[in-house]
Every structure is written in C-alpha cells, then in structure tokens.
Length: 507
Image (cartoon, rainbow, N blue to C red; front, side):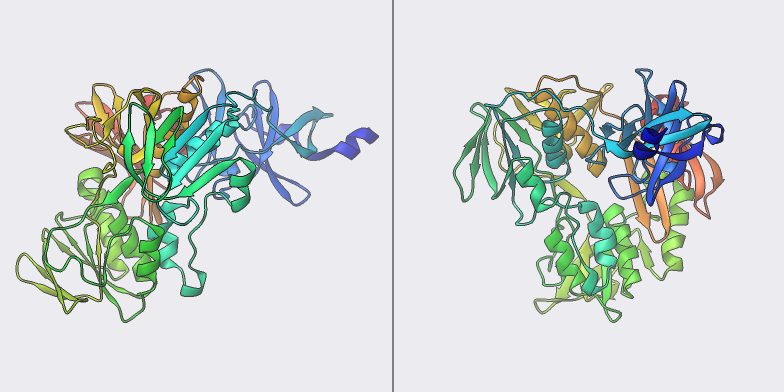
C-alpha cells in the first residue's frame, strides 16, 4: 500500500460515479474529471485545453465505431473517452489523461498524467507548404506533427502576427478596455520552434498547380511535395460613394480590430451595415464600450433567414434592450464627410450621424492568386473531394473550399469547420485514414446569451419546432424540410447540443 500512497491519490468513492456522466474531483489543487464507462474508470484533466471549459459539464457520446467521446460544453471540441486523444476541434491539444484504478471501493488516480503514445516517424524528406495561417492552416500543422510527419512544414502568412484566434475579434477584442486589448495567439513562439514550422510572413501572388509552386510577393518561390491552400476569405466591400473614407472599416483581421478599438468611446456613434454574425457580435461589443450603435439591415430581424422569426425577433429585442437601434429593410447608399465619415445616407433619404462605419456585408473566398482551377459556379469555392483534395497532392480547406455533402456542395465560413477540414487534409496527404467531415457547428455570443447551431448552412426549411422559452434564451429548435431534420438551434442546452454536434444523424 505504501507504493500506492506514493504514486496514487484517492479522489472518490466508486459508487458515487454514474455511468457516462463526468464527475469533477480534485488531485490536490488540480481539477480532474472521472468517467465511469462500462469497462472501467478513466481520469482526465478537468479543463478543456481550448478555452478552459469545465469538462464535468460536458457530455459523453457513443461514436459510430462503438467507442466513446467526451464533448466540451462550450465549443464542442471532441476527445476520446478512452485516452483523451483529440478527435475534433476547436481544441488543438489532447485532453490530459491520468491513470485510474478502483481499490477497496475507492477510485485512485496517478499523481502524474500519462502521455499519448508517440506516432511512428514518417516522410522525413518531404515538404508541406501551406498558403495561409488561419484556422485550417494551423489545424493542419498540428495534425501533421501529431501524426508523425517529420518533414518540412512551411506556413505562409500575409500578416506580421503569429496565427491568432479570429473568433475573438468581434467579441472580447472590441469589448476590452484599451489597456486590456489583446489578440490571443493560437500558439506561442516556442511552439513553432519546437515543432519545426517555418512561418513565412509574405503574400502568395500566384500558384502553379502542375508544379505545386507558390510564388511570393517578396521572397523566393516555394515548391513542395504537398500543398494546402487555406487563404480564407476577404471582406466584401460596398460599391457606394465614400466607402474609402477614414473611419469606414471591415472586420476580418487583427489590424482591423485594433484600428476600430482605437476609435471607441462613449461619445462615438457607430453605424453597422448588416446584421450577420460579425455585425451583431460587434454591436454587442461596442455597446459594452458605451458606443452608440445603429444597425442598418436589409432584413427585419438579425439572422431571420437562418433562425426563423421567433428566435430572430428575440435576438433583436436583446440588442434593443441594451440600447442598439435597428433600421430594418433599408440600404446605405452614401457615406459622406470630408475624407472622414460624418454621416451616412439611406435609400429612403434618412441621414445618420456616424463617427465610424462597420461594413458587415459578408465575405468572399481569397483566390486572387489562382488561375486555371475552376471555381464552383454557385458558391465561388474550389471543388474538393471528401479528402479536401484537388488532385496532384494539392488540397484546399477553410473558406475557399467547396465541400461535397450528399448531392450538394457547401462553402462554409466558420472556425470549427475550417479546422476540421485542415485536419482532414493533413491526414489525407499522409495517406492516413480520414474521418468524414462532421456536420458544421456554429456559435455566437452576444451579451450574456449564446446561440449554438448545428446544420449545413443555406439549407431551406419549411417548419420550426421550438421546445422551451425563446424570450429568455433557453430552448431547442428543430429546423425541418419536408419532415427531414436540416438543423438544430440551441441556447442553454450545452449537453444536448454536444450530442447533436457529434451525432446529428440521431438528433
């Protein structure tokens, strides 16, 4: 028993564990969770490695291969319930695992965590070049190294920063006090050194498909055995007078967010054009800073097409209760001022005073550097196969990829899906088994309310069945088309949405 005392710590009684229900325990001051699954007990770190979510509030799901997975309650990262292996993003690290045993009716865990087995090194003499440094690009880098790839990795970024969390730009970055503004990096400086990722700050100006060569604006051309195109998207601009004035912004980059944040204050009046994800998240962040906000939108309610009138109208009321003004079913036709915006004019002649204007008119795939590869006529992306392949050891992932599902193709502009595609592309280029792209999962945080949505974007629906209280943002809503489920929207139902994100086919 002395050896047990040295290496193991009693953390719970076995009969307090419910099967497939995570239980929070402590190893000294370290939070852990215990999982009782049919063949025993497992112990894992108690915080998600992505953003620190409490994993005891997560959910255990059975996968198609008869194994189990643990799903993070906040952003639906998926980990193996067998060993903590990372299965699906947004987490980029596994869930730390501790050995567990049952003795005398009590559960003991090891005092030190147990590392995952190291993969067999492979392809030491090959080179992977990645155009882009966003969600798909970094997920591909992480997957390559955790899969055993030992060759060169070159990532080409048009920005001077290390890859960062773009999802924070319209939320915490804009809402932060000036002295607290930061752009969260996805990996620190040491990670790139330790994992031998050569980050090149340059712009790809041309890609030659046949030779897999990326021509750079400043540096030498890069040719590689495998190429991943993951250049994301660019903000759409409006073709109206004054669009180039000082004080008119889009929000796609860290530079955009920092520029906007530097203009904010309680005497600033902002006009936001558009009521999509960027526009509404930015509206909430600006109101937290005391900025006067007016949203000009073509629709009556934000997200009306995606969420339906009941949920969308509640979202609009949430914003109005926090002081945001809405002008629906209108367009901005002019931006006026003397080199800097002073006011905007709407299509009915209304004039709105504005210190800043944020254009949230959507985005389009960043493909200016590509000639000769056909683009999808409907969504503008590059048509890839289920492995994200364009042939010739060239892959595309993220906002620029047009992915197949059923009889349709989708181009999806969201963080988690881009990461999943980067992960698939990395494994495919190594010749490893590839899991099917999961049903897209989206989330938006506005004030203290979070909405989650699982489904393929753009799918029409003819019926919405809502269970719960929409006005107080505690509900599940099923979107159906001819009796078939095409999407689920949830608020304050993290476990149910976790199951649906993993097993949409059983929702």
